[in-house]
Length: 586
Image 1 (cartoon, rainbow, N blue to C red):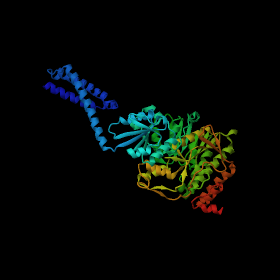
Image 2: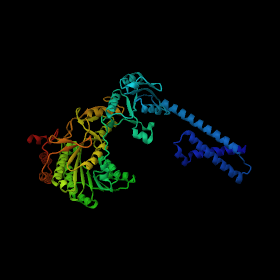
Image 3: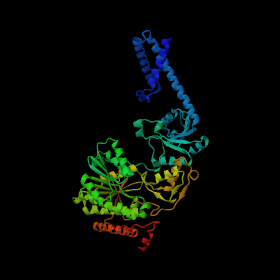
Image 4: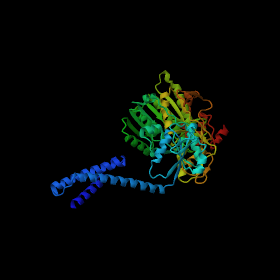
C-alpha cells in the first residue's frame, strides 16, 4: 500500500512538474495528443528514475515492476487526453453562449472560399453560421458546398440580409480587382454588413491560412485601384553601397523612405531631422534590425546653412532625398515666413550644397498643392520646384555637371502625419462629430509605400529636371471617405457619429490638380508613372527673386512676403484667405 501511494504521488508530481517546466512550453503549438504523449513519456522517465534512486539508496524494499509503469503511462495518456478534450468542448460551449451569433456569407466559391469555410468551421468557441456563398462565376450558381448554396454576384445579398440577418461577409477570392472589392464593400456598408478579407496569396504561401490571418477592411481597400508596386533593379543598383542622405527622416514619409532605402544596403544612411524624439525612435528601430549599413542620425535644422554645409563636408552624401517641409495649409497661411524659410530657402540651400559637394542625385519631394496653388504652402513648394528645374537647366548635366535633379509630386498620403485619415479616426474614437470642410471637396490619395516607391523610382529614372507623378486614379470625395470610415468603425452615420461641415479653411481649394495649365504630361516605361514637362525659367531671375526673400524676412511683413510669392508664381490665386486682397490689387 505504501509503495502504491508513493508511486501515485511521484507520478502526479512528475506530471505537474513536466507540464509546467519552462522548456516544454515551446512545444505548445503541437497538437493536444502529441503534447500529452510528451508529458506522459517524460513523467514516466522521471518516476522510474526517482523509484530507482529510492530502491537503491533510501528504501530498498520499494519495488515497482515495469508493467505497472507501462499501464500507468497508458492510463495517464488516455485520462489526460479525455480531460483536455472535455475541457476544450465545455469551454467552447461557454464561449458560444457569451458571444453574439454571427451570420456569415462568403464571397468566393472557389478553393479559397472552401478553405475559408473549413477554417471558420474549425474554430472552437465561435458562435457563427455560414448561410451562403456568393461568386461572380455564373457557372457556379446553383451548386452547394457542404450543403451551403452558391448564388451569383451580389444580387441575393439584400434578401439574405433580410431572411438570415446577415452580419458578416468574408471576401475569399484569390485574385479580385480593387474596383470589384470596392463595389462589394460599398454594398455591404449600405446593408450594414461587416466586411473582412482573407490574406493575399503571398501570405498564404508564407504562413498558411488561419483565423488570425483574416483582417478587417482598411480604408486603403476603398481606393478602387490596385496599389502601385515598382520593382526596378536600377533602384537597388543606385542605392547599394552608396552614402544616402534623407532630410525629414523622422516624419511619416521620411521614416518609411529610410526603411526602404536601408533594405537596398547603402554603405551609410544619414537621417537628418530636427524632431529629437521622433528621430530617436527611428534610430532605435533600425538598431534593432541588425542592418549592415552604417546609420547616422543627425539632429539638425535644414534652415541652418552653416550646419548643413558641415554635414555635407563631413559625410559626403552621394544621393540626397529631400523630404523635410512644412505642409499644413492653414498653419502656413498664418506664418508665411516659415513656409519661405523652410520650403524655399532651405530647399535652395540644399540644392546648392548638392552641386557644390558633387552629389550625384538630388530628389525633391513636392506636392500636388504646388499645382495652380491657392495657398502659401503650395506656392512655396512651387517656387522650390521652379528653382530646382532652373538650376538643373542652368548647369546642364549632359555637359559635365555631376548633380542630377528630380522632383516628385504627391497627392494626399494615407496615414501620413497631418493626413485627414488619422484626424477622422481620432474624431470617430472620441464619439464625433467628424469635421468635413465642404460636401464637394475631393482629393487624390496614395499610400505611404507608393509615395516612397515613387521617390526612389524618380531617382533611378531621372536624367535631370523632370517632375514625376503617379497615375492615382480618380479623386476621392472627402465626404464619402468620412462616411465609410464611420461605417467601418461599426457606427451609423448621423446616429452614432454626426458629420459637420465647417467651410473651407484658409487657402484650401475644392479640387487638387496634378499639372499646371502650362505643363505637359509625358509617358515613361512604367504605365503608372508620368513625367511633367515644365516651362523654362531663367535661372538668374528666379535666383535673384528667391534671394530677395532674405530682405523681406528682415522687414517681418506677411503681406510683403506673400505679394512677392505671387510675383514669382503668377498662377497663385488665394482662396478663402486674407491675402485675396492682393489678387484684387493686381
